[in-house]
Amino acid sequence: MQGKIAILTIQLRTLVSGRTAGKMDEFLSSCFMEDNVTRFIVDFTEVQQVNQECFAPFCRLKTHLDQVSTGKMVLCAISPDILETFTSHGLHTQFTIKETVEKALADF
Image: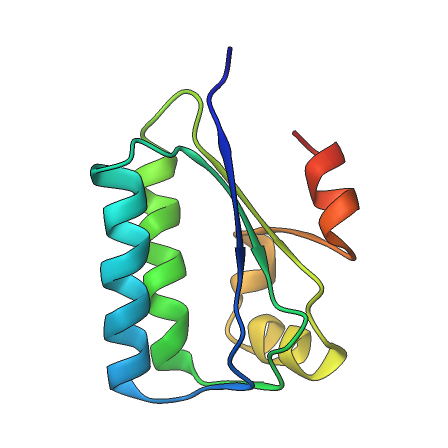
């Protein structure tokens, strides 16, 4: 058994503040450290805007997951504008990105 998969649906339209990044970091860290979740799907369906500061929690979690044999994170349902932001910061090559939650699940 490879462990449970946490499907995290971001319900904010904008991820642009340091406070938001801090809260996401706390939540993602607690899922990994306290709940022992090592497989994540992050659903960006509702998100319309992201800044670089809010990428940090996902990058940190990915770093932790890369150290675990069962660790994996798939991002999904990313709008073209947000994908462009990911691409402009070189993050599109660091993450697995799928079109839908269903396709992300199939990647496991």
